[in-house]
Length: 250
Image (cartoon, rainbow, N blue to C red; front, side):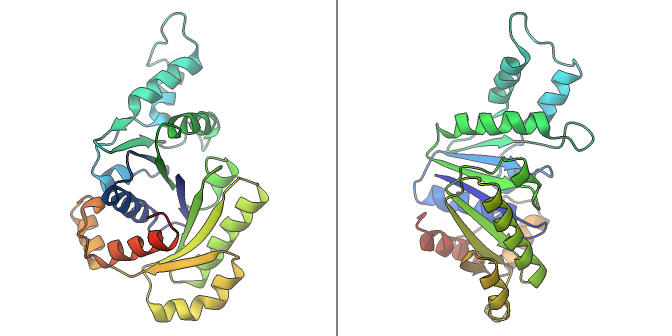
């Protein structure tokens, strides 16, 4: 199963991904491939895994001749080899990090490699969970395609919900092969979701639940503790678990 998470900046995508991984592990659904496709990579901290070399770092080193390509090996083969090496392997969770752009905003070659490599790599895992960068760019670069479930996160604002709707529209227009798309409202109260119901309905997304503001998440972030180690009675952990049961992942 391939699960991807998208949404505008600040909606808590990385927190959601970490808690999805936590619940999958608790349910014995392993091994898991976690993919950090956000240029502002911080999924490693949320998962408590030492950050590996990113694909972008590898590409920069190769393009700047800081790494010599062995004789008889093409650049693409060498890069693929180095990407395999960069995979941070844990007991039950492995992590792949995309990293930042390779130049003045250009992701082209990195994304071409990432698409092919993720497809190849994900075939070896029963579960893949991808944390995407904020906004719409990752959709147009087609790093989020052929996924089983796309969770689009919003905060409890009209702007956030409308942004989620635009992500759904773009995913549909690009025919990315996403099987199911769900809306999650994060750091919200039931009364706020009630007010947002007309906007939620306009998105065309299936609303699958809200996650309450959780002081424990803020505390763990403050002290750089892995979010995956949040206690089971944390309100955010419980809410994500309910969302995963509702969407039949658990």
